[in-house]
Image (cartoon, rainbow, N blue to C red; front, side, top):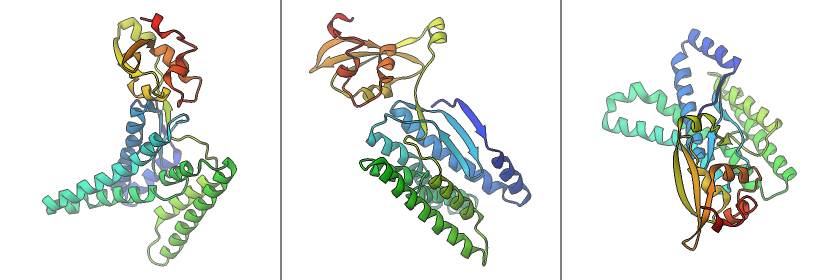
Length: 288
């Protein structure tokens, strides 16, 4: 993972100051840490498939990682979207195990555990831009784009309305301001833009400095019938990638990192390596 930019929304600072004056600074800090864990889990799994953490924005309700994951395979996208909620769920389970072994720690960790559990549950709601909404959008992708957009908007608005109604009832006793913020966010997400993609940008390295100081080479053998995206996870800034292409165990040739990245620019990551790389390196046997 590589953090390229860190942005701070003005309302994040306002929320932090208000929490300090209202005695909620500890809760604010715990929520921020849990949200950062959530987003870093997304980025960690995305990195496994060749997509990296691009920009983290600190928001009043936590943190958001922004970018684009166009070209990622469906199974990989599911893994990326589920990574955040599952990280929070495992954290909550970890605290529960801690209480089982050391009950005296409960008063000091209960707030963090419940925050992680809340993030797990909330993010699985089928409302955009939550992870559950992204999963719903992925499930609806075989439908026409307009139909997908309409269904996603209706479901997201319904979820937002339900949460806002809950906030309204809570005002009779103790107003749940977090519910109000979540409802507004979901309503804005439903009515705003929800372009295909998500939270990560494809890895791209500037090798100018690497070549000047020297860099190790990483050689990876792959069957040429594997999809173009299958080699994304081998990209790394610390080593220069060379793909050794084979077919049925027979050596065909080699493709450099630059040639592979050029093939990625053509899109359609599902193409076999042989097909995607043939315009760049047509006769593999003459390479290497």
